[in-house]
Length: 306
Image (cartoon, rainbow, N blue to C red; front, side, top):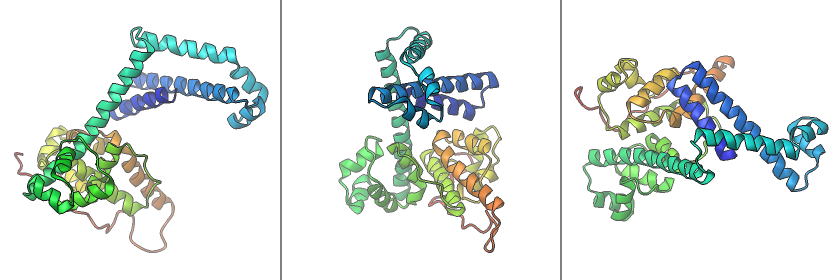
């Protein structure tokens, strides 16, 4: 049930990023609502099987015990699950539960591989830019050439200390690749950082996607967005000078063949921190988003025709 809920939320998020029609968006919301309802019923059913009483269930769900008993009694839960199975069968063309689970697993593996390839693409660009051979990069990083080759091929995701050393030896900024590494690891994100750090992390994540795309010219990136994102905005976003609106940021990431959803959390952090600063005037110090040191990438964009 939890996996089904996660999948429904992912579909909803992708629809939001793609700006689908309202009717389609509401259908995705309806599915999330139904999955939440089923998951809640499953959680209560598990608790009841462990001997949890209706008083405790009601307290946990913020409803009266009599309401909890009526809402999640065994017959109601069974009816809810039966309806969910029928809907899944209709959606999946009558596929068996094993087939559905296998399809979900294949999709998850494909997504994980795509994220690992992005990280490997950025590292490969740095390697080419450094002029080092794989053997030289491995020796400088204290790693075996075969292990570095697997990392560059997207077959391995190293621990962060190893990743950090490797990126530095290739002449890059580890922070630029942290979001790519984090996505490849499938890690949960930390609590919201302060404004300057949030902006720095967002800019670094954008530069990581830029590295993975092979560092095309700013004009080329702008063209790939059909002119939605001006070349000056591309440059400002990559250098951490501006935080574009989400629509612009999403278009920029899509042009770089990156998944906007992997960076949305970082953009939310920067946006949230900025709003907090607006609502809480600073007694001293610079105005938010002014005089922040712009981190610069360890490369120059390619020629305009790149």
